Image (cartoon, rainbow, N blue to C red; front, side, top):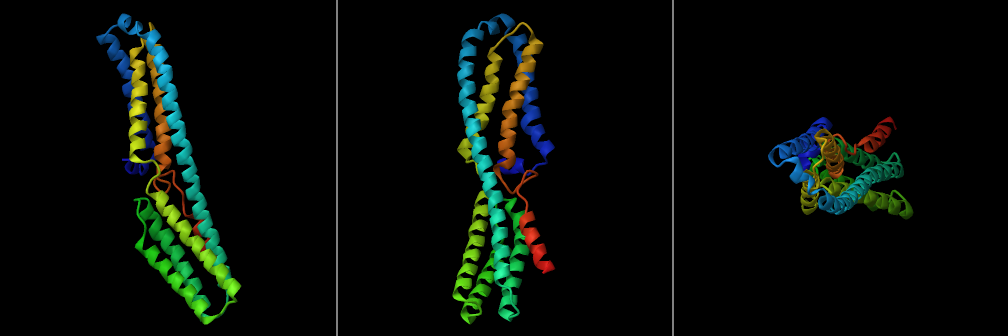
Amino acid sequence: MSLFLSGLPLWAEMALLVVLPTIVAMCAPVLLRRWIGYERLASNNEIAGFKFATVGVIYSVLVAFAVVVVWEKFNDAEIAVVQEAGASATLYRLAAGPEPAMAAARTALDDYLKAAIDREWPAMAQEVGSREATQALDALYAATLRLAAEGLRQPAILAEMFKQLDAITQARVHRLHLAAGIVPGIMWLVLCCGAVLTVAFTFFFGTRNLRAQVMMTGILSVLVFMALLVIVSIDHPFTGPSSVGSESLRAVAEDFAKG
């Protein structure tokens, strides 16, 4: 469900996660006032207010924890892409030279970047990797191993090339891992149920000014479900409008083309 919501346009996410629940939450006090009556609801205010403070604190801590974790992982996804781009640029420069094996290594690196940009980014939006990108990375390893076999570079340079190649591999594995989603299913269950229960708790209150109560309930609902919207939007870092792009890799590939 979070993958489906993450892939929607931002306006659709807001409509489903914020607008519709808020409309329901604002209608509920009006209906309850008609069915139960103001006097019976007002009798709950003292004890309900005390318990609502506890409920609000517990849920706010859960939401804050989830937002911080998701935001950190989203930043990790951005860093992984930048590191992959930086290692690719370094490897390309280390493989400079007129020898056919050097040209083959640069071509293999360029093919990998194109496969990552054109094939893997759309695949990561569906929580999977790209077979073409995996094959291109295998070809890059093979080309680099041929350089080592032919002894076209000093051992120190070859060691650095393999270090950068290892950095590319680790960064790719990291972003593929994050593409599958950050928040586990049990956490989604707690967050969604907690949001509904927190807003529904306000239905036990009764104020003489019904319009003011409806507005307060609506404001609380917007705040609660906006927090869920933030979590949903960046739970899959490579999916939807709020996603990590391939601009860093694309910039490196364009530099290769100019060179």
